[in-house]
Image (cartoon, rainbow, N blue to C red; front, side):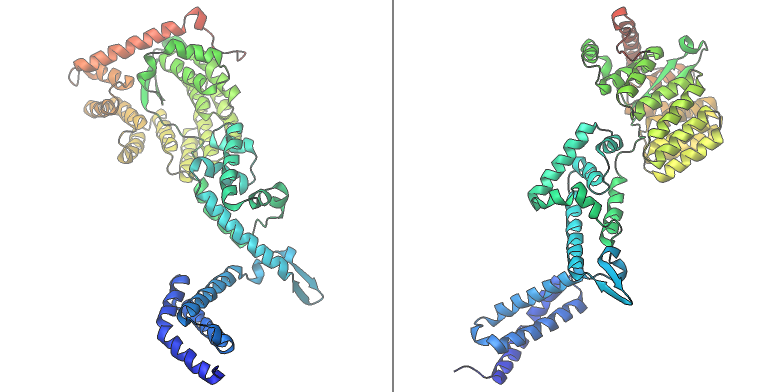
Length: 490
């Protein structure tokens, strides 16, 4: 005999009170620990369960399991409604129309709009979880609709590589979201996206912090220091202090094969850049300039080539040419930090050292983690004769990066100029500790041994070995068959 409504009501309250704590724990978990939200959800679930218990209680055989599932569904519905909650100010104008004094909302369109916003948020969370090699080009393409050419320039990769990585990222997302990805990021759909919606603003805010970690346009990871005699170039007996990412290992085996590779693959700018750096290091600057310019022709956004040839021109007394080169590079730069840095290099070429220091500081403020901008400021102070100020800059860098070769070398140079021979010797020892074959460190220590002990036998051997290899490389590179490696029209 079925129970009447009053008996069902009493049974319901008894059963509910027996399991109330369990239901509340479920609500608390699903509502992310918010007690007030959990209490509201529990109250809604209780009323809904009571109503169903009265009308169809005969079909409920496991009250606890049934009520627990109902409570879970109520919480999920509340969460969905919260995600759909949108203030009037946040509704796009395209979804609002006015008729006299009345404002009408296209509710069906608003629901689609909110669904799209939720989907966009989920998509970009997935994009941000991709490996960095895919994440960065995908964000630039999908979020900012940047052309592949610009993505390639920003990430220092080829346009073809940029296309491949974006396509690979799209394929990964398609596995998770299906064909919806194709329509979402098609050109027609992108035009309909609301760029100023709350979700898109939040996405762009989060993504901007990711993109700031993309490798800087101006970032020189130097590992070795050289000194080059400029007498054959300028007619003045002085030296140039240069820094390169290469280690002396490239002087050993396979140099002939290296030159053959370059002659067979003239379009491979990376090997040509390496050759230019070798020519730069051994002092064959006329040929190095041709190779650097050839690299710039093949890969216009190669800031390494532009910086090195610019330094060569400055050291050779061709400051006006160097200034023009840095100005051209500034027009190719994407980042404000890069533009400030290149404007600083231009100012330094023109002898405007105070202006250059300010520009380097501005670049450093925009990219605090990029030590190249701090190097530039210290070098500018050194060239202007502010040795104590330069020393403070480089010592500050060494406090965070004890093996920074640029800072160690310039601290050594400043100490020699200020006649602090003991300090200079300490810096040299630190350089050789990090790189026992550093040519600058060995030559400077050999020059100081009258004041600071004798160059050790191992160090003498290393210096003779490197000097001999430099001479051998210079002879090979000056052979008639190796006089010209490129057809850059110079």
